[in-house]
Image 1 (cartoon, one colour):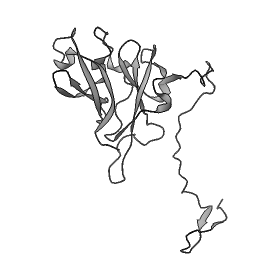
Image 2 (image 1 turned 30 degrees about the vertical axis):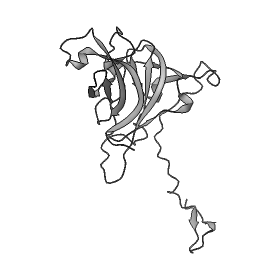
Image 3 (image 1 turned 90 degrees about the vertical axis):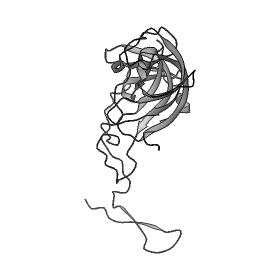
Image 4 (image 1 turned 180 degrees about the vertical axis):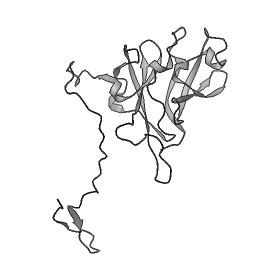
Length: 214
């Protein structure tokens, strides 16, 4: 998986002029662009790279810099992104089974916001010699981020526990089927002593069962 930067499915949209002017002016201006990449810096919001019509490339812009058409009111970033990046090691996946599906999420102001699924960001720690000083692989703390094109023209990045998917052929129940709890288990199939391998160089080895200590 990549470190720091990753490709994303390209998004043709607009960038707000005030983000190109360090928030000094141009709040009423919008410029066509193509977002083509994401940057993951731990403890900072996911940031995006884009190309403009004059050939200019801009690096590391927050999701609230973009909209689908001119004139879309800018939404505070805290209502668009719930969590900062968990690690500089990021993956990008466009899950085919979710592609273009309708989604909704609850923002920090308790509003139910509708939109369309685009792709998913996720984080990890690549190997044991790199210090994992965050929560990228902590079962009870880690979150992914689904990138959503909102109906109002903004974009959002939201975790599983804030969203609901509208899948008409399967999602048929409006009420909560069960109150889900956050998983805190680390699933490991090699920490048990019930099975041992036979002590030989046979290719098709046998497996024997030993008594489990209780």
